[in-house]
Length: 146
Image (cartoon, rainbow, N blue to C red; front, side, top):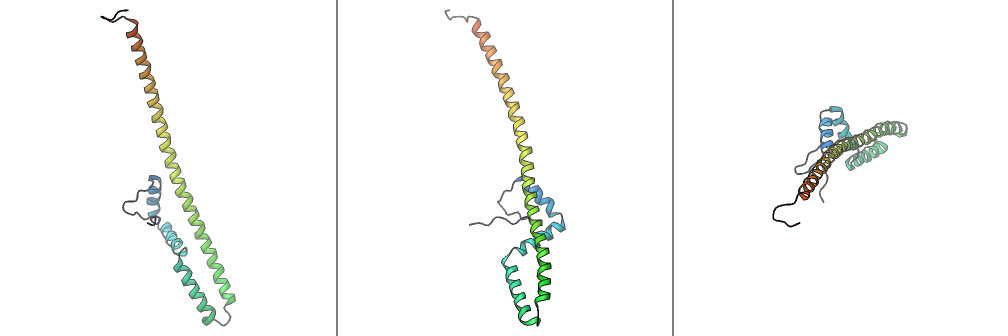
């Protein structure tokens, strides 16, 4: 099973929705967005869990005699920042969906206008064809008995 490309990463042969592609191009130009993406990607990974498990275990067992007050402060501050990055990730996902929806809306409106114009042209051609057939049918043609 092939993994989907990471946000902002263009894998060869993988086509993206044009609205999403434009969104990622704009996002790639913003250093704060790139930094938030990198932190969010790391914070949502197993290496993050293993590093924290090891650091907190060492801290509780070896670094301090009574680690709980400081550990509680550190973990609380980290939770505040991590929840902010979760919200940034949710906002990013909402922006991706909005970019896709905006692009789809514009494309569907264009398609609707094109289809409406084609329908009008077909209607006009059908009326012209009927008019010509009626004009031809009203006059007797040579060599055909009435």
